[in-house]
Amino acid sequence: MRAHQSPRLRLHPIKPHDESRVDDLLDRLNTYSLRVHGVPKLKDGAHRLLTTTPPVGMFGGKYVFAIMHGIEPVGLLDVIADYPKLGTTFIGLLAIAEDRQGAGLGRAAFWLAEDFARTQLSSSHLRLAVVNTNSVGGFWRRMGFVETGEVCAYEGLAARKSDHDGKANSAGVEYHF
Ligand SMILES: CC(C)(COP(=O)(O)OP(=O)(O)OC[C@H]1O[C@@H](n2cnc3c(N)ncnc32)[C@H](O)[C@@H]1OP(=O)(O)O)[C@@H](O)C(=O)NCCC(=O)NCCS
Image (tube, rainbow, N blue to C red; front, side, top):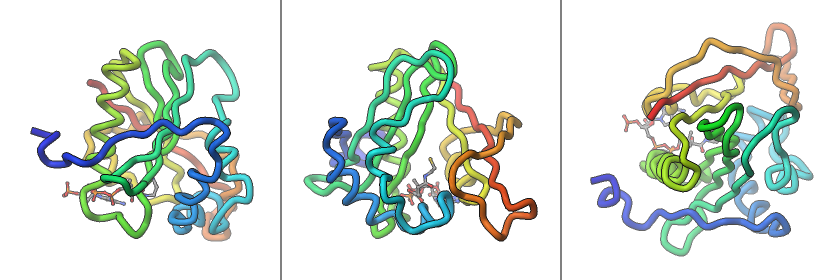
């Protein structure tokens, strides 16, 4: 049983004004930020995470959670309901604080996200995009995702010198329940 493997992990909703809670966790995600944004921490990262929604089209709602391990916040989850289409939940971010990675919390948090999408948002699909400067494709494959083959230019700050063309791309991956 999944619940028995991670009895203490739960999702705690974060209100849009509660930037300090997000900020504290972003302080523990510097490597992720460097890979994706090109800087250890964005000045307005918490505000962005709490307010950024899809640029075009319709979606059902945005939900941001602190991932809690007992009373300790260990990560962040940002999901968009019914995006890019009805019945699909888009994972904007699933992140475990760097000091807590590699101990199964990412998997347990994903199971919570999956359960939330299925039971609270009535979703039958999950989708997300992986920025190519962030080497986490293997994690998502372990979680059962497959690449959709779609690649689009990433419009963030991740124009990194190591990329051939100085630009970052993001690739879509998808998971069907
Ligand atoms: C990706 C992330 C959530 C994984 O969390 P974690 O707690 O370290 O992962 P877990 O310990 O639960 O690992 C689960 C499995 O995935 C594998 N895995 C974890 N990170 C991996 C990676 N970067 N590449 C390949 N496999 C990975 C683990 O080896 C483990 O495999 P197993 O099934 O053989 O045991 C975490 O590295 C993270 O928060 N990164 C920064 C934010 C980010 O990039 N999020 C994804 C973009 S939305």
